[in-house]
Image (cartoon, rainbow, N blue to C red; front, side, top):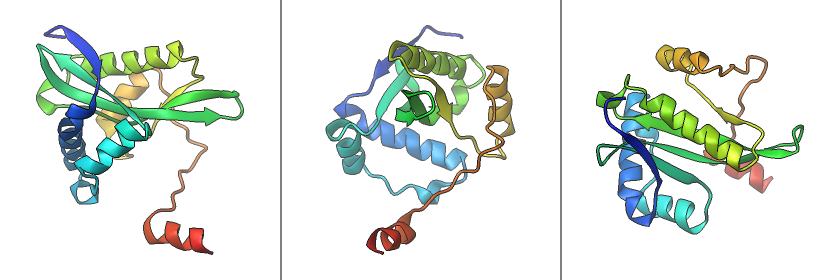
Length: 160
């Protein structure tokens, strides 16, 4: 790493920065049109309802990335885990060890909280991220398929 990296938890005033990083990540993932979150929704979800947490990676006094995560639960382990929804490092800061440091920080948070695991999804086409995660010892869950019900389908199912 070039500069000293620190971490800090987001607070309410960081909502615009969280949204900016979400939009930058969505653009990188070719999913910019999928972002419907706005500052009010994020602020309510993260800081009022405590549905997720955000930590920032800070290098040389500037936020250069973020991780948004929340607890899930493993019935087999009988313990909570951490689910990493998004990890983003700005493009000009990649390749400097910041992503690895962020995952190490998340692993430390999971260990401190007694979590049984840390997990996330990765897009199939994102080979550089896949290679990076594998280099850390992460294992793909090849025997599992992710299913999702959302939008109008979710509403219809809830009403039936």
